[in-house]
Amino acid sequence: MEREAENRPLKLYFLPFLAAGHMIPLCDIAMLFASRGQDVTVITTPSNAETLLKRKSNNHLHIHTVDIPSDSPQIENITSATNIDSAISVYTAAMLLRQPVEQFLRENPPDCIVADFMYQWVSEIANTLQIPRLAFNGFPLFAVCAMNSFSAHPELFSGSVSEPFNLPDLPHPITMHARSPEGIFRFYEALLKMEVESHGLIVNSFVEIESEYVEHYERTTGHKAWHLGPASLVHASNQQKSERGHISVVSENDCVSWLNSKQPNSVVYISFGSTCRFSDNQLYEIAAGVEASGHPFIWVVLEKLEEKGSKGWLPEGFEERMKEKGMIIRGWAPQVLILDHPAIGGFLTHCGWNSVVEGVSAGVPMMTWPVQADQFYNEKLITEVQGNGVEVGAVEWGVSGYGERKIVISREKIEKAVRRVMDGGDEAEEIRRRARQLAVKAKEAVREGGSSHRNLRELIRDLKLLRDSRSAN
Ligand code: UDP
Image (cartoon, rainbow, N blue to C red; front, side, top):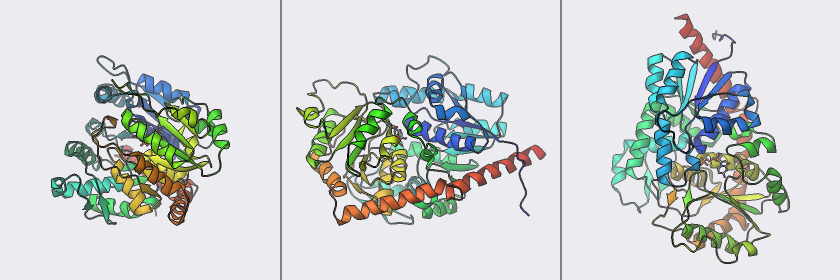
């Protein structure tokens, strides 16, 4: 007979990394645990705490603030960094959180800490204090398996950057057209190694989108992965969706009424996530490409530093011509609110995993344009495994998402990808059908009895048993 765990709520700490792409999903996951009656605390810095407290739906979470020792950086979240140097300063500040986090854990030990893999030192603290640790990296398991495949085959780094190659040992034949800069790869590789020493890995995805990879990961690493997502589905109302993350520069009402004026599936949503800032040249090509496609659009362009000598990033008269057809959001957009609107018919995305899984949950086909990190792998999950999107043709794997790149993606490529998804025809219909099918599975996963719903229940039970056995010893 299975042992029953004591029913007292778990005391759980969540330690998200200081970047929207990490913090948003981990706080959503924290909310999932809180919604099942667990006692959940998010540990973060003062300005991030302030942002979190502005979300009404966060009122089930306790927030514990820790100050960054030494000279505080001007900004405490990578999303506010407009160049690589300020992004690095936030990373450095995040690493300094070790001391205040350790002190808090010593004084108030939880039953488990869920920490972003960027904080490598959490593993040492958790081992010393004998606190169970769950890891989180923000990637889909597919990307982790792809990275592990690279690790096992160092010869993959010796090929020419422009030559396509296959990723060995994976459940599907995957052809890559770009490879990670080796330094960046080694950085992630070291973090992934620490992860497998944790009690388990939490994944913001659902089993059905990568089921072969769950089996593959657990068999090849001996480590347990818990798919609990899509976590963004924890937000049901428009208000909750628009409050997610940072404060949006457009109101929920303006966004929804603009979208209400458009036909179903007619609008392209264009966003490159929370850190990527393209050069003016590249933005200009996006504007020209989307105008040439003839489709309505919402285009999110984050604030960036002015470029010296630039003639600007919009073609002459663009905004006047696109007055009815296009909305440019200069700054933070309520992404999930937009994606979930029936007028959205396609998503031109950088393939950050949150964006992908949010687009999948909304049933929106994608035009993929990866820039860095896990994004080139995520693209392949869409275009080669699931078939719910088409590639724009990006092959330059950046060290970061900031600034000038060697290759500017042309307006023709952008127009072509948009038309392939938005103009109709057999290929577009099939992609749309697959996108819809995946959305049904995503939503089923988080419903009572669905795979993520069950996983969360089992994980809570597992952690309670662990707590009981530790207190018995
Ligand atoms: N996001 C948003 N509004 C924006 C930009 C980003 O709500 O204007 C959210 C988006 O919904 C996602 C996260 O920020 O949840 C970005 O994470 P992702 O993994 O897509 O990309 P990253 O920013 O980490 O590159």
